[in-house]
Length: 130
Image (cartoon, rainbow, N blue to C red):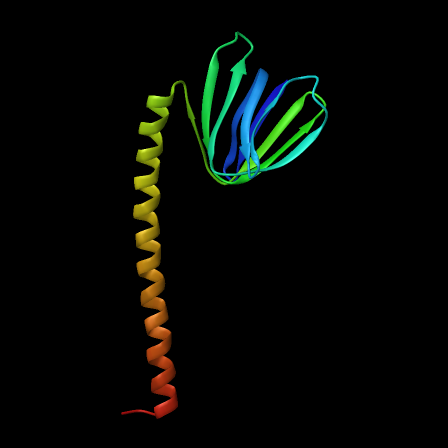
């Protein structure tokens, strides 16, 4: 099978695989080349797959959609991180989480300033000049 994982910024992964294990709202599932076509809404968690050489590899994925059509498995998600083992993946996730947390704090601070400015101007317009 061909596994392709797409992010808004581009394709994260495009590999030949013999097996994909992922998690949906009702539990985990396994896909192999001869399984029927399948669609699932993924929940945040781990996804594993086996390379053509039989090596198990891991991805941490955010919410997303998985579609198996024939011998192609397409995954579309907002965020995903690759790892060769669970320990390195955990470290990578922690680093990514800290980057996202910092970016979110900066964005929320800017939004709060904009909202405060809008409210201040609204009251100035409503009450007239001081």
